[in-house]
Length: 396
Image (cartoon, rainbow, N blue to C red; front, side):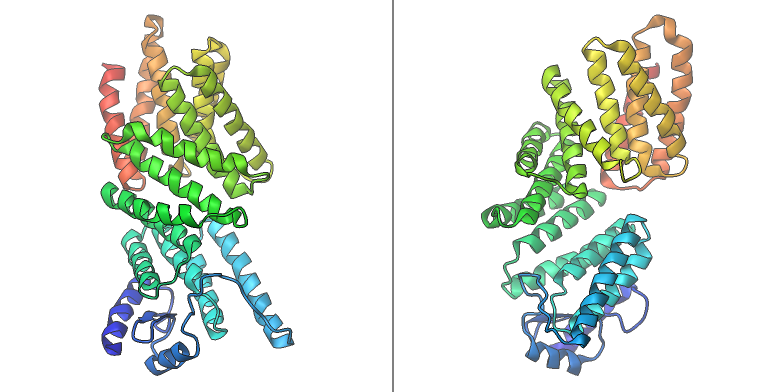
């Protein structure tokens, strides 16, 4: 049994390729315990006996006060900070190596490594190795279930990332299924004493809303999911930057839906709050692609409210900035195409703007090429097809 499990996870570890042969993902089911980073079966068994709950549910570190252990604590803190910086800079290969080091140190101390495993899966997906990341996350989820470890926070992170990975693979049904399974468990576990879990519940609601918005049969339900997430964030007295970003994106999506229902006052309220959050964030951070989406929605609200000059000014400025940015980073391509589509729609309704419309057509085609060359994930494929269909409506 041990050799069978060892063989299975050795092969999985080779897919992960974290840097060297000793870094093998290995779950020792016989000992009812998850183990990472070794080929040494006897050592794995020995450590399993010493600590059957390596994937403990509270994710807290307990250190004695001797100097040696303090040094370990500092190493872990330094590696966590290093990972955060590498991740923020999109240095995903380097961040995987840092996670490997974290796992190695923490396993030696008998500490929880479940969150690091989850991060490995997440980073692999971000690094376009989607199936490898999904393999890690599904196996971690399976181990938690077999060990009967009830960790709602870890489950919430696993479910969000599996769902995103399945969306990239265009498996919307699987992406939705994993959330439908996890969300009731997260809802049952939330408490005001654990704001992080509330945040993850909001993220899972938002992710389910993202899936509904791409599914023609469930498209009417997405606003309800975004509203659930919005209600959670509104209860927070203070939001950390990552929560502000999530909240700003949700507010923009709700505002966009309100425009579609001609609820312009409600759209204006939501988009104003979204803009405020982005401005707070960008005091210390570069402008995010999603901020442009908020600006475009704001411009559309201005147009519909009769403030045409202000609306066109915002939309055109966004178009100019996005045209610069997509040449360096294709993650801006969706926002760029949304902007071009809006501008084309406005110009098409004005017979005197035929020459301008021809120029926008060239920009639209250039945007399509960039979008085709960006990450071929599920949502992008769906949007690409929609933009191709819109092209004939806008320019013929």
